[in-house]
Image (cartoon, rainbow, N blue to C red):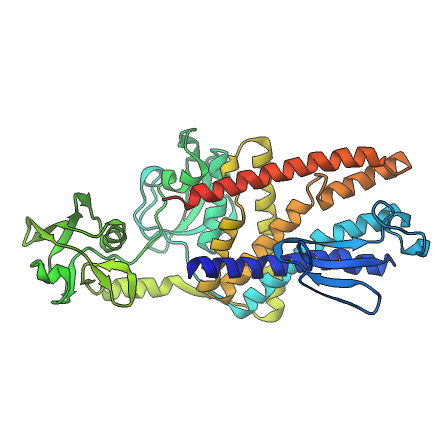
Length: 454
């Protein structure tokens, strides 16, 4: 079901984004009087189409990885029977430039609208609060329950803000100043020395190397209730026992216990536990299947209830990021600018070689994240859709032939030169652009496969 859901949400995501992107080209082309022959979402032979009142074929094709707007153009159409004002090539350079720019522009507009809607609907978030800091964070003096307020003078609201700021600064190995609110209510600044991160640490390992651990409800692996019909109770575990290891793997807390159980294969499991301060061992023949999810294995135990103080603290960390329609406009504008800036910064790091190409993601990752965000709720999916829309707009503005940015670059050359570039030159440039795009897509797809492997 996860695979099917991921495919479904990938189709929905790309369908929405591609439709709006091509709608930009279509609407501006129509505005300047260019005849549009076909507006198609998807690639391949259309599986559905109809003609509008102006003779444009509106079509849907089966491969949902893009789309196109086919305009009347002397390079690939017979224009002998057409009025000269309807031909794309006959339009002034600035009009053709705006037609090309309109696609990415509509992606930016869509992202802004999606962020606005997300803020109006509301999105439940957690105040970024540190758990037990480790490594560099611990050495820098960060303490448990420190709330992150600013990173390098940038206001922090959510864990996504924290990840973006730390990743971009971590790639540069730049020391940063972090403003925190301590448990005593004092606001202080601490220096996080990211320059101490070894050069061999990859981007995917940065947060772990920093030692950032979000706060979570304390939950020691101490048994509260045991089902007498399930393996743990049958093996002799009782309420109050604290599991310390499974098959020799150390268990730190309840969260670690749950994750470790899911990594075990069906068969005998050796359990080490503490009872009255004494370390003991017991073995169960096999794990049981969760009655609510047959693909999930369980021991048959439940954790202790957290303290009232921990429950109150956890409730204080939850907030609803929701605003009125007018205030949400400013918030959406700020969010759009922030994510655009961070995306441009990361793209430049990739181009300049300061960031690894392992960061590139393809359709598999997009499908998985789309499904995950959709399962978390409507607002989470809106946020994801806005992020991908911005990324699509930025990528299409890159000065690479086959992309809108490449076509806009050709038009600038034409304006400077005073005449169109030769078809031979454009053809060669398009081939180079296609090679570059296929190479990037291959790397992204390869990265997707590696991430999917256990």
